[in-house]
Image 1: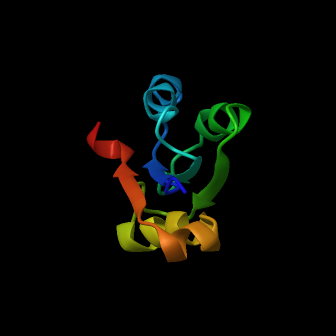
Image 2: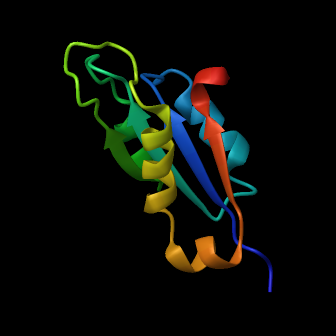
Length: 102
């Protein structure tokens, strides 16, 4: 049985790049989870685009509403991991990609 791969993506407001990014990983990922982490910024269409391509989507929100950056990157990362299928997580690794570094 082929191992299943969950690609967990932490993305900011990247509506212009997310489609190309998802296309690049489509051949290797069995599921893609995109979590938007944008601090207190206004959201763009990133999650809408990801969802239209079959991704599971979620958002990470800061506890502080006056800080424009992600205050707890580890919490945002854990949000992506908690969104993957438990069956796949227990048997296989999860690839986590920080979209901010693309």
